[in-house]
Image (cartoon, rainbow, N blue to C red; front, side):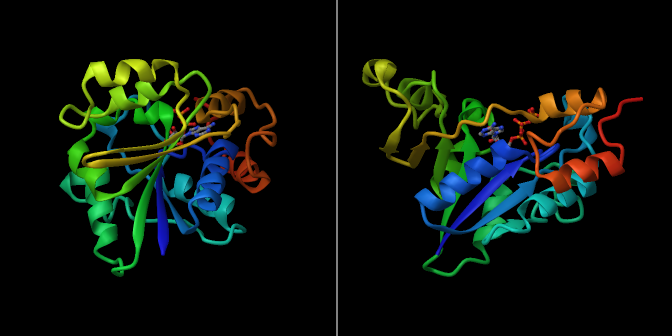
Length: 225
Ligand code: ATP
């Protein structure tokens, strides 16, 4: 069975996340997609994140009607080791311990996040553990994707240079890494924009599942001080 793992801060989960997961599930026959809100300890945060419990609750609300979509506690504060710091490689290894021989793991990620993959903890090991489905966006070339890979996996510049003209689509299969580039996810929305709109009391319905919008309102999330 093909299983997708989709991690993020999900602060909050929005239509862009759901569109990515739906497209990946249908294109790669994923029977299950685990949405994994990340637990980021305060000293690791660029900006304060909403409490894990709220982010998890919103993921649960947004995914409840979708067959095979699961809100996951794999990175809940109680589960993660190292004093709350959680690395994707640990999550992937933990999850794969529960797998059957026939299960195959796909790691879902947007291209903006993938651009930083080389800086992730044990990036090469992570890329070796599972296939990656990278949601591409117009303006990114195949060269951008190839050059994001960590050293040792990255093809030489002479090889990637001609990729400059090619849009990021299709499969990129190299020793130690398999990337599936997924096109056509046109959801111009970000959690940052949603938080800013919520802070101004604007309606959020166009970007979010209505149940998530209600949750944000009820708990007065993102309202600032
Ligand atoms: P923020 O604005 O707070 O940085 P975000 O909207 O990018 O948040 P994250 O939870 O950080 O959301 O993203 C989780 C994953 O979803 C990342 O891999 C990211 O690239 C991807 N993603 C985020 N927004 C979109 C979108 N509109 N379309 C497709 N993928 C997206």
